Image 1 (cartoon, helix red, strand yellow):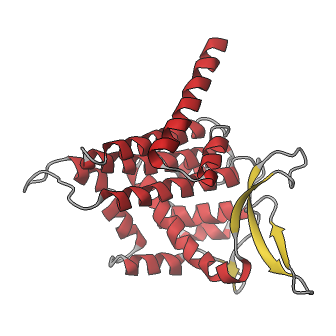
Image 2 (tube, one colour; image 1 turned 135 degrees about the vertical axis):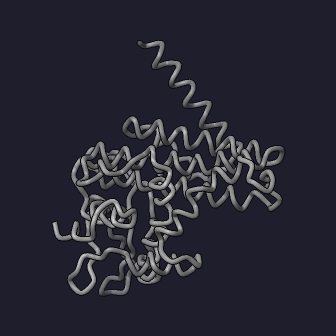
Image 3 (cartoon, helix red, strand yellow; image 1 turned 180 degrees about the vertical axis):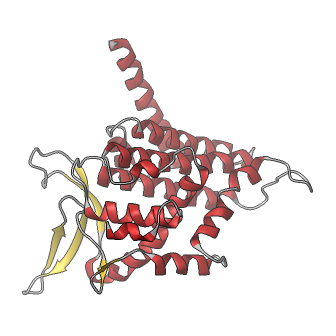
Length: 277
């Protein structure tokens, strides 16, 4: 048993260094990986798989771009799977409805986070939200990912404020819990589709288009692949950020539950009335 643990430790460390070399991670992203490798299983193994596929996508980019596209999309889906596992392990209400075997569910996660971010973008100038690693706020000095807000004092000084746990808040508009429907509609309009659901349907077939022949020929990626890989990397890390804001906390955070219900409604996995329960 000890030998197994030792071998796993070596694999983890060499994998981390390799990824940093190939994908060129910044120090904050390296710190994210360090913490992800300490998170709960099976989520951390799906996250590791995501990072491995991301690494392979960069390695394949020049000689086999179609396979690089496939690996990058798989990386995004594996990181979504990791987050699904965390929500289930922490027993969030209705998390069991998330299907990590369903490409549609996994593909939908990043567009949903983008839509959700449109609402919070309005507060960026006022509160300058920032993710940072901090150990001072933990009673046991454990370093965790935190959400920091900047607020002015009466004297005009800049103060830092933290919600503990980081996502323990609810977003309401005129006293009604927000469902992110306007933001999802805005995303759909930007993508020239009828709905966010239709947009996800369009995206969910990307992997097949990248590697399988169509009736009129075989796929051939002719564009600059680097912007595509960079965007997929940002999707993967947005999922990893979410994991580190949720997994360390056994208590249910209000915004996580709110976002989960909104996500399931977007998937048409449950009715809108769920907000009333």
